Length: 265
Image (cartoon, rainbow, N blue to C red; front, side):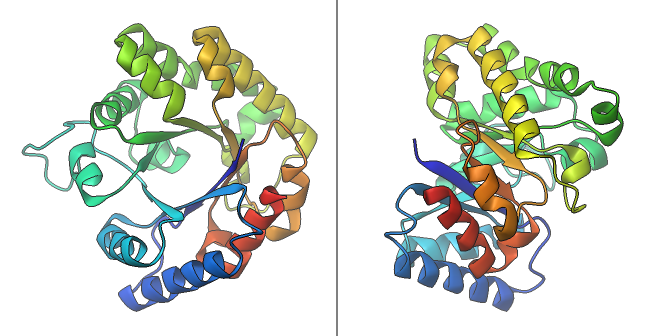
């Protein structure tokens, strides 16, 4: 299985020129290191404002980098009177291939609950968009030993999707679902769980998914939270960790590609 290396740019960079420079550096780096990166899927998630710009560059310069959106509408899969939203249909038409849903920042700042996230997943499925579904526990839950209970509750969305879906949707989720485990306390804080801790959590996630549907045993499970070139090799050594969701280190092409090279090995 190839590793998945996803760069979530969040609300960065600040200018069109900075986006251009970052994408140019990424394209140049991927081209120059294609052999070293051959065992990785490289993906980037720009801000919504810059999606079209990045798509245009990648379409003309690099088919090797996949395009991801940081969010998708829960209100409609197509069109409607939902000011400020963007639909799965609009993203698919633009050339976006995947969407991130359930990120802890969306859960925290926008109060996204399970019903909202389930709608988003259904809309992505209706338009053939892949889903990178984020889960993770707070520091308080981690310290209280409640990690698996929190993750089990968050993963019920997958079970609900399968329960109310047709066979075609079950096939979709077996091929277009990625789970990203991001302990909330490790995102942008510099605090990093041990590889052993992440490996055990990933085993739990995989077993939970398999209990919903046997084919989900092959679902990629990524780690996210203060991932850097300095620790990427350690995470890449675990067979349970199929890649990473990278934040700050994705804003520089060199550091992002160094992480990818660690997983490609």
